[in-house]
Length: 272
Image (cartoon, rainbow, N blue to C red; front, side, top):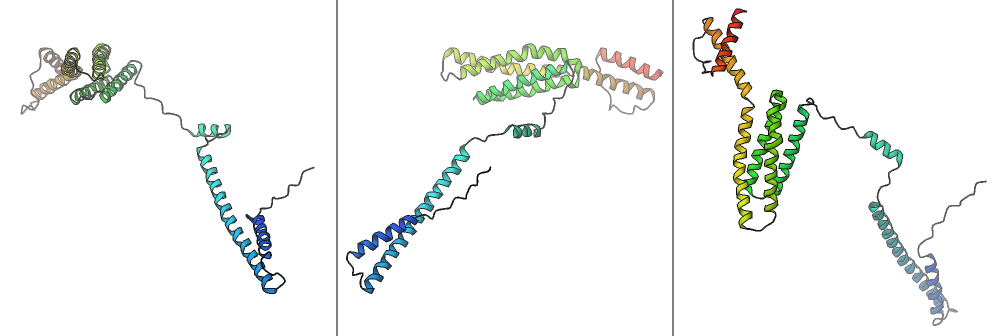
């Protein structure tokens, strides 16, 4: 059997207080005014009603202000309270999140080089933020630029991987190690003969490291330079045999190995 729940009646704010104020006012005035006369009766009743109305008005305002404050406190507490996520809602939110896109793979030999290069760049980026010397920061930025080009060359020309791996296994880690030493000494915030001398040596070493990194990058293009030189020599040979060489647009001075290779390639193509 279901229990019937009656709706709760809202009490009017200040109702009981208005009645009490009417009674008190009537009793006080009846002690001084002749209620047996008409004017005394009307005056006492009017004054009692006026006090009851005034008390009810003030009580109503106070009750409204208290209710407003209570509502504001409740809203603030709801904002501060942590949101409780139900299991079903959590599953829906997890399902709505799209899975992360898989990283692009370039092969088992190239991927480790790219990952190691990214880790080195991240560490140099941290050192760039930590070290305050603008000169050293500029050198770190240049090292990062060249390092990125060297690691990306593994994608463009996988035959350079042995050279790039040697660069990543020694030259780059040693440079980062020295930069970390500079960062630690710089963080001391004091000057001393040994600290100043070591930091100056590392700063000068960075110039040599930048030059070495650029030379390493240039060496990675040796194979491409040889291929380009060979193609140009073959083009000159074929143009000369066809009587089309009217200028020196393609004339170069190839090295001995490249010249012999170009001549052989030209003979083969002409025979075909």
